[in-house]
Structure formats: structure tokens, C-alpha cells
Amino acid sequence: MDDVPPDRCQSYAAGHQMHWIHWKHVQESEPATASVVCLDKAGIVLRVEDGSHPELTFWHHDLDRLGSLLRADATIWVYPRWHALQVGPHLFNCSTRPDSSSMCRLRSRGIR
Image (cartoon, rainbow, N blue to C red; front, side, top):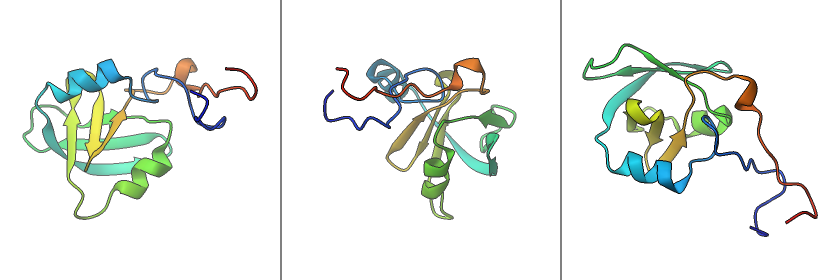
């Protein structure tokens, strides 16, 4: 834990870091291919290619990082049941909406 930068989010709430248990559930489920309809400060809107879900709107605390991974050739998978999004090898724990618990929890300097 000491090697985690103090300004890195420590929250495992929806829309923040992915906990290993959440990751395991995602890995054991089938993804659906998705495409991006819109990405802005409010979140990302996805179209599920197989039509199994209406457009999905997800929020993540680091939308800048998510946006930087999206390229024309990026493969995007969505796991609607687990509110997870995968871009290439990168998994994102998403929220269906930002709310009062959407604040990042930062590690305090000097506290272990």
C-alpha cells in the first residue's frame, strides 16, 4: 500500500477502482461488443452492437483516461450486469450515474 501515490483514488465504489472480486465476476461473464455514441464530462454513452440493451450511459471518475484509450480501432466490450467496460486490456468499474458517493477517496500523506 505504501507504493500507491497519495493522489490516486482509493475508492472501490461504482465508477472508481475495480476491486478484484468485481474483476473476477467480470472475467467469468460474457461481454457484448459496444461502440461509443458520446463521451463527455457527464459520462460515456454506448450502443450495444447485438441490441440486447438500449443505449447504456456509464460514468467513471477518470473519463480523461478512458477517452485517451478510445481510438477508431479500439475494441470495446461492455458487461451490463456488472456495470463494467473494457477497452482493449483495460477494465473500468463504471457507475450508471454519478452521485454523492462519486467523490474519489485519496490516500492521506503520512497515514498508512
